[in-house]
Image (cartoon, rainbow, N blue to C red; front, top):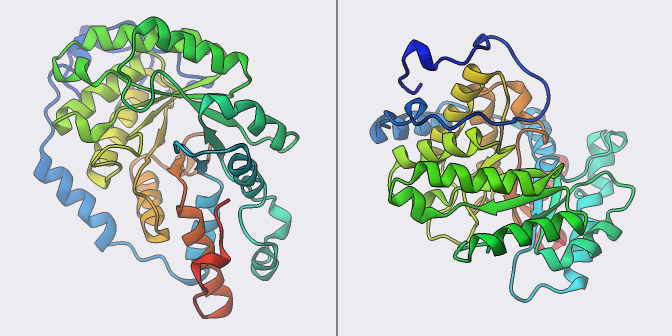
Length: 333
C-alpha cells in the first residue's frame, strides 16, 4: 500500500465498492511517489503460486473453460490478412470443439472468447464476423507497439478506431516518461487517451519489461488508473520480457490498493508469452488469491494470447480421452 498522509485519503470508505467504470482521480503524486517494491519478496510470493497450488481433473477442466472466456484472441502480425482475422473471429465464437463441450457436459453454457484484438485496419472485418455474438472487438492504437509517434497522431488513431466501431482500445504508454520520472506528463497523456476513447474501454499497456524496476511498474500502474484506465496490461507481446508473475503481482496489488482508496475496480490483462494451460492456471490463482472471485470474469480479467487457446483445448481433450492429441487438431484460428 502506498504511503499517504490522512489528508490524501479518498473520501470514500475503503470498504465501499462503487459500480461503473473507473473515472480516474485528480493527479496526486503523493499517493504513489513513496512506493518501493522489494523484488525478493515479490519473487518469493510469486513462486508460491506455482508450488503451493495444484488444480487437477474436473476442477482443472472447469478452471480452463473459465480461462477460455477470458482470452483476448489476438493477431498482431505484419502479415495479417482479412482471411486470418475472419478465422480468428470464428474461433472466438466457437473456441472449443463441440465434441469436447458435449463430453464435458457444458455445451449449453455458450462458451466464447473474451474479445478479439486486431490492428485498426481490421476492425470492420472483425465487427462483421462477430455480429450478434456479443464478443467485443479490441484494437491496438497510439503507435503500437513502440508508441514513438507524436501525441496528436496517437489521439487521431484512437478516435479513428472508436469511429470504426472498436469496443476496447489497447494503448501503449510512453515508456520514456516513466524512465525519466515524468509522472504528471504520463498522467496527462493517458487522461487524453481516456477522453478520446469515449464509451470504448481503455486498456493501458505498460510494457513492464522496459520499465527497469518493479517500483516503476507499480507507479505506472497507479498513474494509469488515476488517469481513468479501465484495464492495466503488462505488455505488447513484442518486448524481450513480457508477462511474468512478479510483474503481475505488483500490478494486481496496485489494483487492490486503488480499489481500497477509491472504491473503483480496474481490470487486469497479462499478455505476451502465455502459451501453456498451466500458465493460465497460475495467473488465475493469482487473481483469485489477490483480488477475489470477481477478477476471474472477462469484465475484469483477460489474457492477451494467440496460442494459449490451442494448448487449453489440448488439455481438455486429455481430460476427456485420457491421451494427448496432436497440436494441429486444435487450431487457434
